[in-house]
Amino acid sequence: MNLKRVIRHLSSGQATVRRVFPASAMGTIEAATGVAEARHDGQIRFAVEAALELSPLLSGQTARQRAIEVFAQLRVWDTEHNNGVLIYLLLADRKVEIVADRGIHARLGQSVWERICRNMEAEFRAGRFESGVLAGIQEVGDHLSLHFPARVGKPNEMPDAPVIL
Image 1 (tube, helix red, strand yellow):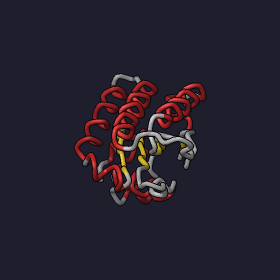
Image 2 (image 1 turned 90 degrees about the vertical axis):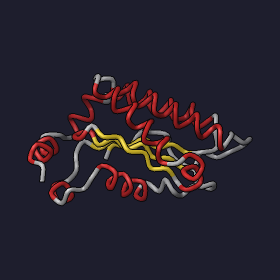
Image 3 (image 1 turned 180 degrees about the horizontal axis):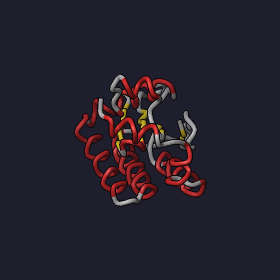
């Protein structure tokens, strides 16, 4: 168990999320998701969580493990063409994870998602949270538009609004 990590998580809360992502930033992220999705047939969800709950934290749950749980909870896998993508941010760890459904993951592979995550984390280290998320959404959208171009009359299968966990 990493005591510094435990302290970071215990001292992070919803106020941290609101400070880093005020309502205006959340609105901008929602709009950017809608714009990105207009260019492709996939679905992008952005979820941010201040910290892990105590039990998962003490058991050593990683941001990746939590992102996979959130992917299932938000039903990002439940798209017609298996092309949903979750961008998950665990604020206490400043860790980004991307979980992509099998339809798009098979075409790109984990290394592409990892690169996008590391680029976003670099922005976060510089204190640029909103621009980091917007860049991540843009890049995920670019890949989705290449492999799943928009079709006429495509439905928006998931809300564009960011999720605060």
